[in-house]
Figure (cartoon, rainbow, N blue to C red):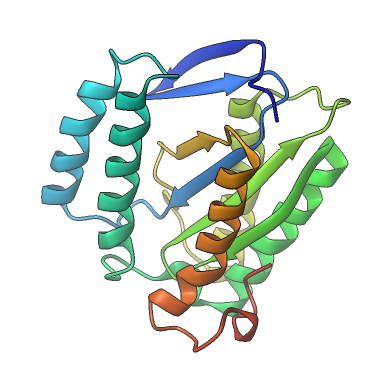
Length: 199
């Protein structure tokens, strides 16, 4: 696969994001209380460095991986309230992910963990949404429905999210494997097909 021809940088909070023409994205969204203050501080240090690095560089890719693996290590430790361990909440989120097809965004793979979720997003050629608009759609709708279903109020998702655009098919395959193995690695199931919330 050839490299996308156009790259756009945008920032939410302190984490830089890169949107590319014809891009495919691996995204991670976590519950607002899923990481301790110490871990958030460590991630903020990495964020500060990412701000000034060119997105096609090897340094950016390496640092982005470091950010993700640091975050994921502590997410799987189960800090905070596991709102998504509720089958009602997970069902709502899965429904909202699938409904993105109505916005011309394919979601071929995802996994819903107790305090975070991962998904692969593919905007079709007809998609009129930017990546931030896709994320606002899924986060906003799912938060409202989950809060109502669980009888809770307040913030559900962390304002920031992590995203990575797939540079080639090998990277795509690695992310599919990662999504499938995440519930296994976290000790939720023995094999990924056993996890009802992994596709």
